[in-house]
Every structure is written in C-alpha cells, then in structure tokens.
Length: 213
Image (tube, rainbow, N blue to C red; front, top):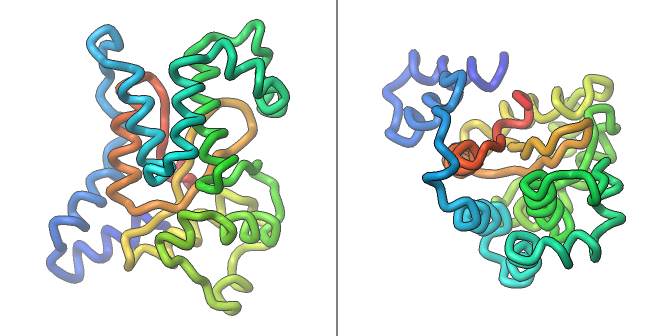
C-alpha cells in the first residue's frame, strides 16, 4: 500500500482532522499552478525555502545567502561541489546554480542527504539518521523496521516505505529536484513539504515527495 493509499484509507475509515485533509490534498493534485516569475520576488522565495529546509540555522543561512546574493564568488568557492553535481559553472545559468547551491547548503549543513536512486539501503539510512532534521523530528526506527525496508528496491522505494511508517505522525521524505541523477532527500512534516513545494513552484523549481521525484 502506497503513501497515497494510506491517507485515502484514513479518510474512509474515520473523520479526518484539518491537518490530514490538507495533507491529502497535496497528494491528489497532479500539477501546481504556474506563476509569472516577473511578479515573484525570486530572491525572497529562495531565502524562504532555505530557511524552511535548514530550520533557520544561522550558519547555514549565511552560506545560502552568499549563494543567493553573491553567486559570482560563491560558485568559484564551491566549484568542485558544482562539478560533483554535473554542473559546468562557466556554462550553467545562474538560476540553476543558485537552486543547486541552496540544496547543497542543506546537504553540507546536515539537513539533507545527497544520494542517488541505486544507493544501498544501509548507506542511505546511515546518512538519513545522521541529519539534524531527523533528530529535530525525533525520527527513530526500530531494528525490525529498518530490517524490513527494501534491500534491492532502491532509494525511491525505501522513501515510499518510510512514508508509510511515518504517516501517522504526518512526516514524510521529501526531495528537491535539481536535475540529473543526484537526489537531494530530507525528512519533513507533510505541511512543510506542501509549503516548500508551493514556494519552489513559484520560481520554476520542484520540491515534492521523494517517492514521486
């Protein structure tokens, strides 16, 4: 049973809280509305996304601000990081570099995992358990729960299974889409994923549930 089905079953079996109804609506919307970027304060939205992803961590946000407001120096300082993501900083557009830079700040400061779809279960879980936000959300799996997670289904399958395990707490595994094969994955409350998804969409980017990336 997928995460979407779990929420549908809850709706059928009992009266939902307003919070659950809000979460369900996220999963049943196929496309977010498109926005005119000329009417959006893009820098402000980037900053809001960074604040939410990095829990207003001052040190992390100082670095994110450098990426958002001083990209010329930032991209040279983090050239090797961009290359690891497959970016040529001399050719990539500024928007893509800023978006990937914010995601990488979250990784570097312990708020997201940089992985790929075929990473091993144990490697992925070790990285996920080491995140600051995992501790903040008090996510702790039992040895039995970890052992029951898919060994050969890949990271996306594991994220789907984690969503099912955490659904009663309205927590899920989110992902920022930066293009390419690299995944930027992080646990979050369902309403935060909704908020991040809406913000990202206003500036032409995508944050969603990792199982749907």
